[in-house]
Length: 320
Ligand code: APR
Image (cartoon, rainbow, N blue to C red; front, top):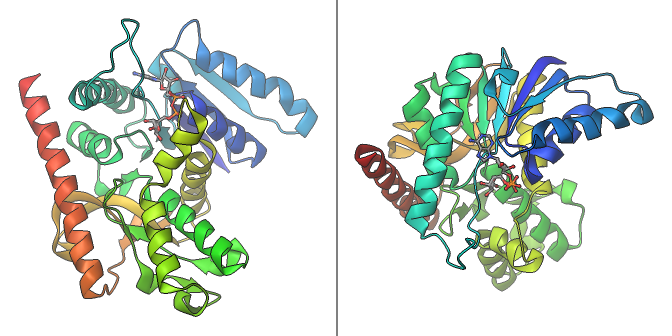
């Protein structure tokens, strides 16, 4: 069990994260910071705390609007951000305006981490994922093993779920990975997809596989469209919890994560989703998958759009 897990952002995902940490007994102390008044973080934690006698779990809770609650956290999970929603005057922010707002939030998240838990392993979920992780890297400058973006575990879980459904088998039997950026150009790697160790093509037709891969790339939007307001929050939270568990139990689990590449896959100085070994030290090893030519081309395309996003971040930061 870890001493302390810190959560930044107590909205939908932050709430599920806090709940899962308590029910799975992952940390002695759960800390939650959220700027939303009157005191969303305190309220969410009080709700969970008052339920602990029912589930028989002892846990310490520290919540509030200030980052000092994160003092000495071992792992920090970041979900702070604002979604694209209608303003009081009926207009929507442009993509650039929204990015600007979320980068400012990430600057304050960075200050909080730097001040109160500079040695923590940071898992970031907030969107736009690639831009936020890159900003945290620029702001914090922490060793690359301690900064990890959560996207690949979720995108791969979605791919696995769709394959399991099509094959009529347990999700446990499906192994699959989605690499690259967390956008429409993410790369479901068919050559790595196995059903109980056998090639996926034995269970699912080529046409159905192609449709599943397209659905995987747009899966976040599908949920948003159905829910009307907000976005997926249970599956992203569980995905980050899987990463946190791999770290805190030193499991050496291979999971696709958004990490800083320095030459691997021929990519330099960019955060890209690739399989890594997660253990006590965070990212302990980057695994280079043997991709076929189509997958290599798809990854290059996805990386190009990550690179464009990072240039946009650099330009915005230079202006501010
Ligand atoms: N510090 C702390 N918390 C903040 C800050 C800040 N500077 N700015 C905003 N927040 C909080 C908001 O008050 C809100 O409670 O972040 C929370 C975000 O919660 P939700 O809007 O419910 O979003 P959620 O569904 O949890 O998703 C969080 O993860 O998957 C991504 O796209 C998603 O970027 C979004 C993030």
